[in-house]
Every structure is written in structure tokens, then in C-alpha cells.
Picture 1: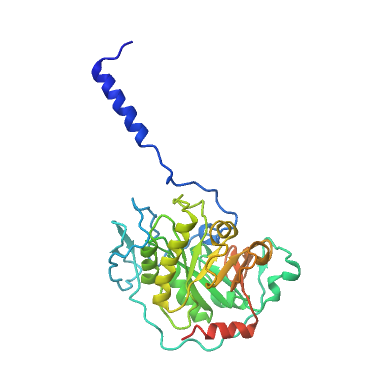
Picture 2 (picture 1 turned 120 degrees about the vertical axis):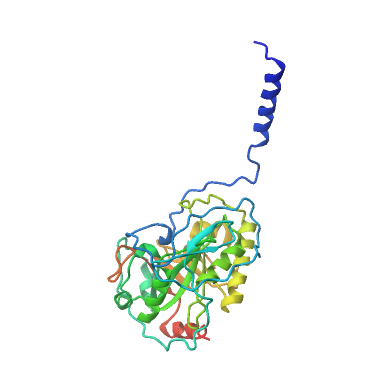
Length: 343
């Protein structure tokens, strides 16, 4: 049948509108989850009641800029656990959380600590042959909310000489166990540092500001860590170009280095390294995930300071599985490395 003039015009407008709204070459890509993924994004134990803040879903801003330099509101003092305070963040919405007072440097770092021998078990043991991480002297762990309440003294006795604690991810999420883990790990005598899970749908500058706002600057703390990997479990499905990845990382790391006085460590997994980091950041320390073979096999030529050799570790003092790591050096080299970062 023949269309009248008005419906015909209306149909033409709708057709034209539909054509012009299709995604262009900058459309985001959906990637499959990496098999090499830190336990910070995969729960392995019941989540305890949070005593700091609330997890807040991430949301990408409508238009990302590489280096966000807008104003960051002053942090609020910690309040009792029964109260939270709404603190404005750069994302045009209120986030319910509790943040610490502005970090200050402790007067003096801890003295040289005892090194505990490796006594961990593994739910999925791997035979690394002559390259076994057991031949290295100083082992440690990394934890997040998914490890629940930890008996730090027991965990240390099992061989945890250091711990990296998840602090933040994106631009508005604080791990609800960070404050408790940070305090209790120090009381147990572990060397500890904090890590940030980088979120590709938020600007690098605001993520750095968020980490700085929530992680104390303390003498004796290990260098901060930027965790970069493809995460198919995230609501952010963006996979930026290699150039954009490197630029965002540099903005984030420069801010942290200026604030903490230590060059950040880069944590990554094989697929992300292959896509973005091969041959890059040669003057940065690396923490490499490799749970099947020695890092030299899948990160050829890359120098590293930490090796995450298992994501299925078992230990007294913690329920469920835990990531196991080792320092690249002798006990003497460990003490020297730590001492150089205690000023």
C-alpha cells in the first residue's frame, strides 16, 4: 500500500536516526575473563561484615579524560563503625564511605624482622622443577575482603613475611577490610603494602587521588602497587589501546610516586602483559603472576621483584584459598631492599 506523506516523512526520520546512532570504531570491546586473575576479583570465602565503608558499584563517566585534575575534597576523620559519612567524589554522585585523616609519615619504621620459613600448602600444587619458588627465602601473600577475618600471627608463622593488602579499585571503591587488615598486619610484624585494582572506565588521575586519600603514607611500608589486568568479571568492558593503557598507567604511577616517595610496583598477568607491557616500563619494578611455570618462560627478559606463583594456597590463619608470592632474592637481599624503603 502507498504511504501518506506524513507517515512517510516520519519513517524516513526514524530510519536516519537509527543509522547515525550505531557504534563507531571507538566502541568498547568485550573480552573473556583471564584465567590469570588475582583473587581480589574472585571470591573464595564468605565476605565478613565490613568495618570500613561500603562497596560502591563502579560507573563509567560519559566521557573519559586521560588526566583528571579536578578538586579532591578533604578526607573526613574515621567515625565509629555505626556511622558513615557521605563524601563527594569526582563522579557526580555521593558515595557512602569512611575515609581516614590525611596520611602522615610515622616517626620510625620497624626494626629488622625475622624471616619465617615457607610452610604453605597448595590446593593445586605445581611442580616447578629446578625453578621452584620454594628455593627462594622470603615468601608472602596478598589479601582482600575475600579472605575474611585473618589470624595474622598464625599466617605469619606459616611463612607470610610480607603482605600486599587490597585498598582500592576504580575511583570510588574502598575494600571494606582494608583498614582492619592494614592495622592488624602491622601489629603482627608483617611488612605490608597496599595495592589498587586499576579500572579502565575511570580516569587515571581520579583513581590516584582516591588511593592517596585512603592509604596512609608510612615509613617502612612497601611500595604501592598498581594491579593492571583484563577482568571479564568487571562491569567495565572497555579494552583501550596499548598506547592509551600506557598513558593512563603513567599518570597514575607518577601521582603515587610523588606522594609516597617510592616508585610503584606494577602487578600484571600474562595476557595483559602480552598485549600492553612487553618492552615497556623497564625502569619500574614488576610483580608477575605465573601459576604454572617460572616467570622467565612467559615474561622473557623481564626483571621482577615479586612472583605470584599460586592462586590456590592454603594456610592456617585464613579460611579458603590465598595467593602465594615470593621475593626475588636472598634473605639478606630482602633486608637490604626493605631497609632502602624505610626512610
